[in-house]
Length: 601
Image (cartoon, rainbow, N blue to C red; front, top):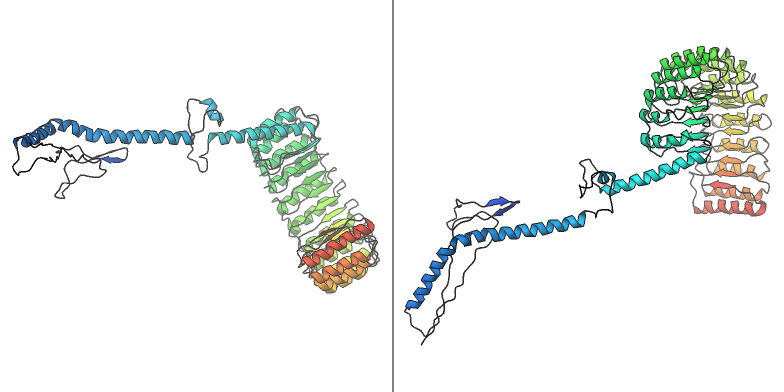
């Protein structure tokens, strides 16, 4: 008796992420739809395909039982079709959502910091908003705790700054970039200040708003003597606020407002302060935007102020009109001692008016800086006239003008009569051998000048020869600046010969003169001779090589009484051999005489 068994091998439908197409290649009318960015298959009827396997003794005729099994299978398939259709959609979709949810939780757990580790001030205000804080601004998509860490460090630094203000008499807090908020915090320490006399808040990003921090603080502070706010863009508005505050301050003697975007309105406010203030001694307004109008306001204040001694207006826009207005203020002023007008383009006309005002000045001006003002030989003539008359001027700066040989002659003639000026700067004035020869003649009978700057002038070997001949036995020059003068090796011979006899020159600057090995060897010969004055020699930028370095090192070893303590050979062509020779000479001098020589190469 044969046995028959039916095994139903059913092919379940697969989960497809694309459109359905019919068997003939045409697109089906029923489309899949998108859920969470994934296409899900459409719900369509389907038929279960079953394979019935018969196992019997043989025979090709299908028995009735077999047909019955096949019909039962078809009937079951027709009854379960709706359930199977629903399952074909729900089961894959549920699996997709479950996997997505698990992955999201895993990513959130890895990326989001645990509560309590890194929290910012925003988190403390809104604890219910957990998770990562993001910003749309560039570079700000950082964890909130990073900002909190910076904030804590900033507060610690500000506390340290406050301790300095309460502990030291001179406090430099420049370049710390603490801004307006930091200044409000630190101003409290100034309010109770009993020690700090000099404070610098320069270059800290302070604006006009931050100046309000001084209100109620500086009025009560009598210890603070110097306040530096340079490099902060406080502008005219900030200066006005500061002047209102300082109107009731009797302690500050030096106020520095360099590079603070001060214009004519700010200068006007300062001028009004000067009319009533009796404590301020030095006022610095360098590198601002003060024009003729501001100069006029300040000139008017000079007529009424009798305490200001130093006025710095370098790098502004005074021009000839500003200089003319300032001259009128100087005529009636008795207190001013230093006037700095470097870089104001006052020209010959302006310097003429200024010299006339200074000639009538009732005070004792000791320093005058009129460098870089487009002054020519005609302007130098007026300067020379003032030099002849002054009985108080000690320091004169004419650096970076264009007085030429003719102008140098006017200055030289005036110096023959002057017996007060000790420092004169004529660098960068297009002076040649003729002009420096005239200056050398003036030094024959002048023993007052101790500092002479004639660098950046093409005086050449002839010019340095005339100067060296005079300085062998005349004058009282202690600092001689001859850098960038095109003297060459030939000029070095004249200087070397002069150093053998001169007993006054302590500092000699010969940078960038093309001395090379020949010039260095000439100078080395003079270093072997006992020179009780020379302490500093600058030979930088002179194309000196190892042979020149060897000669100098041997000279230092040979002179047991060498007085040189500083030797600059930087920016030359020395190899390790030349450097080693100089180092060996330095060590030898120290071993023999315990004298230290600072050598730079």
